[in-house]
Image (cartoon, rainbow, N blue to C red; front, side, top):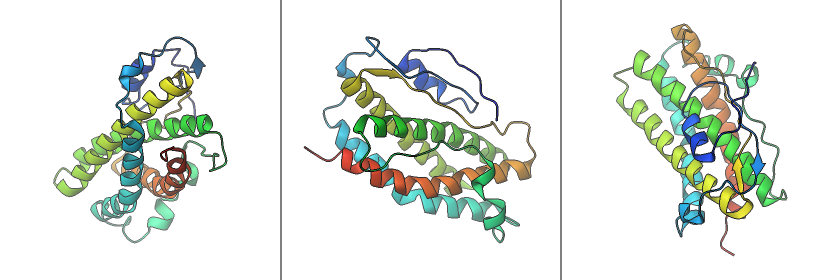
Length: 211
């Protein structure tokens, strides 16, 4: 899949870029460009822990509801149609023994990608299933939690490591694809999300435990 350089942009501008469901890239840079530490709330670590826990606890329910709302053949052939092997998803190679800085960067990449993907999926479902109120509400709630998590990871990376640019690669937009392909792309991303979020929670939460 192609992705193009987005250039070196300020970290807060990168937060806005994450909402765009397109391929993109920004460089990891350390330096003096971080905003003041006033960006962080006093309970940022605990808040980040709660956000990851919520995403982990609700991922399977979101995926199951998504399948239900797509109808056939997705309901009965999800193993085949939602196999995520053919899509890009950020590699997640860190573990509990990885350096905290490495874990935080990997988490940022993962949730920045997820945020953009949720934007794609939500837009498509508003078009294809406008009456699926529960699904749309869950998608919006997941997006809200993800954006809050990205904000907190931004704070922690700046405050603790003076990192204000992160290499982020985004998946393909679903614009212009058929209804079937839109549904399939959504279920592939959500299936992979279910697989990865549990691992992410196991890896991240020990690094955010109170000292």
